[in-house]
Image (cartoon, rainbow, N blue to C red; front, top):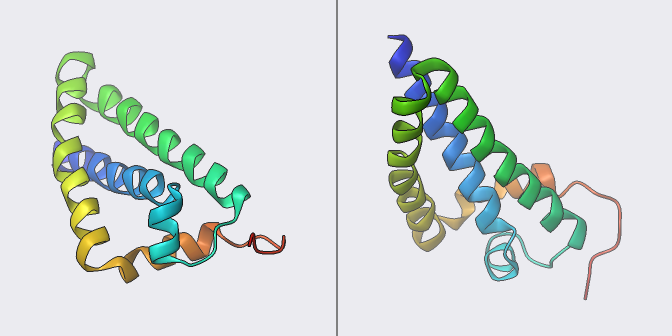
Length: 110
């Protein structure tokens, strides 16, 4: 049961990380949220890489370095596919992530 929790946690962190890295790209951000804010792009990049790294640490702690790194690596493609399908067909599902991270008071870039 604990293994399932680790796998689910890693998959959730992969989804968060890959979604953040996708939204950090200007073209995806414009399609999902509108005008680009430079500070938001940096936050999204940091969040993306931090969640991928945290997922690696979590699964290596729970499963050991050998199987943990394999599980982390094998859970990347389904998460990437889910993010790609979300960007293609259901962009609005990523708006809450962009809205939470886009809460800054600086003016919009034109």
